[in-house]
Length: 233
Image 1: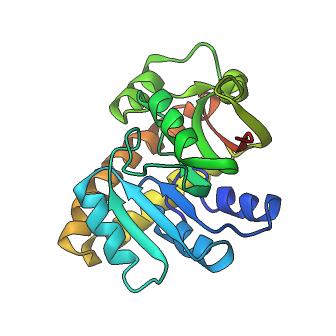
Image 2 (image 1 turned 180 degrees about the vertical axis):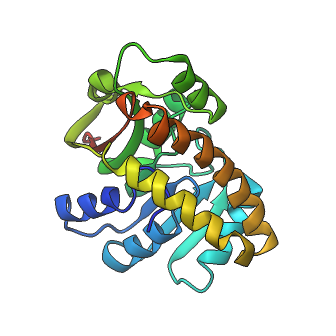
């Protein structure tokens, strides 16, 4: 299972919607090791994963050790090391829903090839009026969600064609329920570097799951997936 909002559904929907392969793909954000494996098996012989902290780098490299065609690098998502448009597909799942979103999306558009695809899963707000406990959860987790009613417009205004859009809010209940349980059960079996990363993740998931499952956060917290396409050069 993919331990991210959107679970396995985001990548499964992408595979069904865009069946053809790509020569090069980029995955943005931690926790995407299983997604990298799936993309290398179905879509592409060249997959790059970027993360923005050292613990995530060590964890991803360990989990993807021995996988041919996959490289893992650490860099800022809004200021990558890629000089020219390089990727036919860029995939981001719950990794850009924060204050640097505008700069990250601009950078993603820069390094995406003309007519390339950008598959993004976004934490979204389901209501114009959000209670304080939900705002606190988002703030503590560094999340700045888009309002779901304006999310499509957000990407259109930045020059993307919206190829398709899916509401994956239903996956949050499964994510918060299963992820917390499985992380707790497996924490002791992890290496020191993995444990450091997953302890932080577990703490974050604990706060969010309590808000979502027990305090009525499901009325305000959603998840939206977009398959976008960059225009021709």
